[in-house]
Amino acid sequence: MRYLVSFVLMIGSSIASVYPARIVGQVVDKIVASELNGDWLWTQLVILVGIILVAYITESIWTNLIFMGYYEMQKGIACEIIAE
Image (tube, rainbow, N blue to C red; front, top):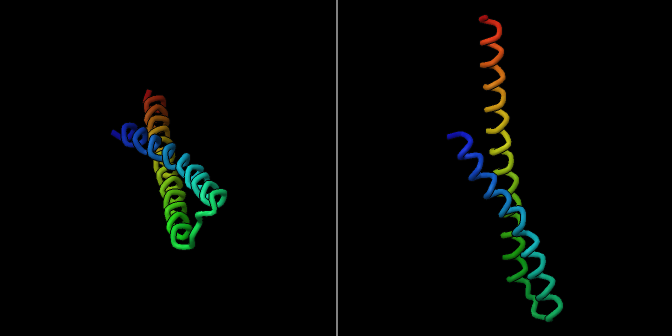
C-alpha cells in the first residue's frame, strides 16, 4: 500500500512540477498581448505559489515513504542475518 500511495503522489508531484511553466507562459502571453491586469496577475500568483507548495509537499511525502520502506527492508534483512 505504501508503494501505491508513493506512486500516486509521484504522479501528482510530476504534474504539479510542470504546471508552473504553464502559468508563466500564460502571463507572458498576456504581457505580449497587452491584456495583463492586476487582479488576474494576483490570482495567477496565488495559484503559482499554491502549486509550488503542493509539488514540494507531495514530493517530500513520496520520497519519505520510499525511503521508509527501504529502511524497513534493510532492517528486516539485518535481523534475519543476525538471527542465523
